[in-house]
Length: 177
Image 1: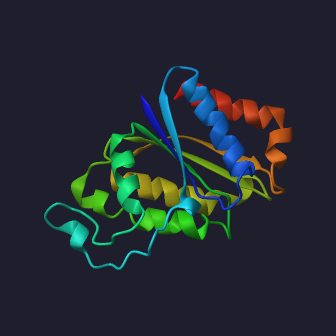
Image 2: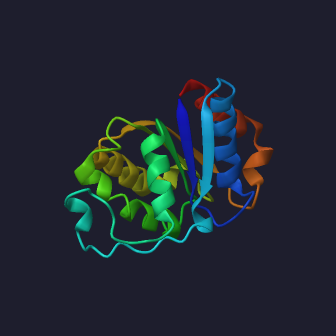
C-alpha cells in the first residue's frame, strides 16, 4: 500500500509532524511505501473558481506546486491529512490545499482512497468538531473513505512527543490501516 502524508503545519518538528511521523512509522513497519509532503514547502495558489477542472481532462489551470502533488495523490492508496487547529479549522495552507482538490470532484480519481486526519490542538478533541465535519464532508464529496483520526491535546512545539500514550496511539493507527 502507498501512503501519502500531508503536513499542513508551519512548525517543523511540531506536534503535527510528530504524530504524522508516528503514523508513517506504523505503516512502514508493515512494509508500506510512505511519503511525507510539507505543504508549507510548496507554492499553492488560491483556487480561482475558473472551473477549468470541470471540463475535458479535469486539470487545474493554475501552474504551481500542486502539479507535483496531484500525481502523488492519485498514486496513493491512503492519504493522511495533518493540520493543527486554527480557529476550529485547518491552517490556511491546508485549506488552500483542500480547495485545490476540485479537479477530483469531476474526475473521481480519489474515489475509494482512504483518508486519515491528524489534528493536535491546545484544547484537545473537544474543539475538533468543526474541523472533523469539514474533512468528513470533503472526503464524502471526493468519494474517499474516512478511516481514522488522531485528535491530540498538544500546543507547545513538540509537546505531544512527551505523551507516550498519544504517540503509541498514532503508531498503532498506522499499523492498523
